[in-house]
Length: 357
Image (cartoon, rainbow, N blue to C red; front, side, top):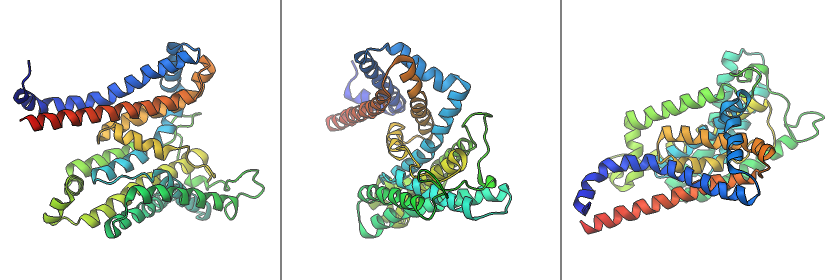
């Protein structure tokens, strides 16, 4: 029988294993409950899941579609994660996606006559900067005015969505367009396709590069230590002569910029124009993905792939097994629920063990 003292000695060894197991257990539990929902819908869970994951991960066009959906999820999830490292909750990914899409679209529409080697980076930088500004606003309000960033980031989503909606219905609307969207961006501003005859574009490569660079920043740089210190204990960080205010503003701007790249990739790699509905809820899925990953960059990459596979194979599952697409969204929600339960249990175990020592 393991005593409390032995448990304390084993805890440093068990903690990484628990961190790895929790997302896996949460996903497995959600899939099991999802199977029950599929049964209630009168379908075969094995047939449904086979159709879903086989289409999204093993077929050429299905995997290309999965990579396409993974791109904005990964960019935005990295933005949520980096904010969490500093103890900030960025719920504004959706709005930052819209602003990033707007920035890259403006460059693609109004900057002409330059080669792709300049045009593409310029449009990406514009997308990053527009998103960064939308992240800077709640960062400034939190650091200087003490306004809760959850409220400001959430409310800024609605402003961004309606701003883009107004622009594509009025000054940016393509002549004769039957619905609100802009003209096509310049060909030189379009991201190249990486899987011929599929939707997969170079945005996924950029997203993976961003994940690698962010890992170096957070784990291997002094700034990463500064961010972690502010997130762990702002008061102690202040006494260690770390500017808590500047760190919060910087990290929220970076978070917004990463989400802005998600919007830029949608315009430059997939749609080639600015639509009224730029994002289909990627910003809100990103919050779940960041929490599921437990602060791990690698976890964000894998969980983004999982969520993208669910999105990619949902329609095929509906056609093949007669299962409503809403079951997929239920599985996503259940995954978050089970992870939250596991985190609460873990915290309770640690609290009890510390109290008994």
